[in-house]
Structure formats: structure tokens, C-alpha cells
Image 1 (cartoon, one colour):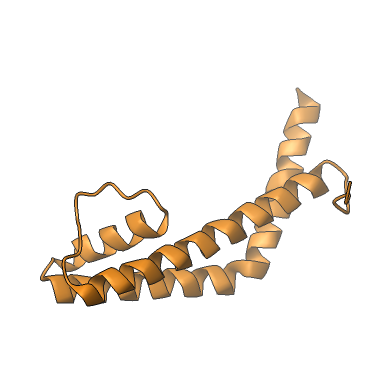
Image 2 (cartoon, one colour; image 1 turned 60 degrees about the vertical axis):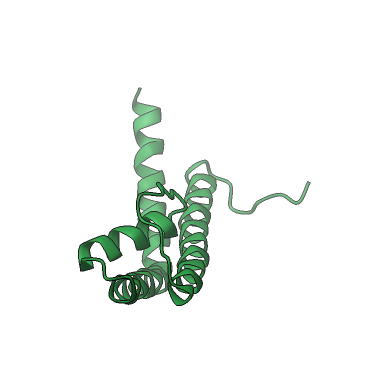
Length: 112
């Protein structure tokens, strides 16, 4: 039990350290996603909250389908939101994988 708790603490320590490194990029991507969501809300005539909701549901590739942009500009911006969300999720996943390797005591990922 103590070993698993220690490993979990090491993982969190390495994860938040790695997140601190990529945080400027992640926060920039979130800002871009939010801004594009507000632009889409304006173009589509949606309330601002729905634009932000649409942006992060689209960016995280959840895509409930309850809000669908009709205008061509909005659809193009939704594609940009999707790309930004994929990059953001990939960065966070990469930080998690690196933290797991370091918490297990593996410094480098083997090529085999």
C-alpha cells in the first residue's frame, strides 16, 4: 500500500512539473479555443456561454451535437478549434506518459 502511494506521489510530482513546462502552450491553446468560441457565438447568434461550451466540447473531441454551426466561417473556425484541442490533449497526454516513466524510475523510453 505504501509503495503504490509513493509511486502515485512521484507521478503527481513529475506530472505537475512537466505541466509547468508546457503550461504556456496549453494556456495559449485554451485562449485560442475560447476566443474562437466567442467569435463563433457572435457569428451564429448564440449566447457567449454557449459559444465557450461549443468550443471546449469540440476541442476536446466530445462533440455532443447539440450545437451545430451553420455559417461557413463558423465551420472553418470549428475545425481550427478541433486541431487546437487535439494538440492540447496530446501535450497533456505526453506529459502524463513522461511522468509515468519517471515515477517508475525509467529515464528514457526504449526504442525497441
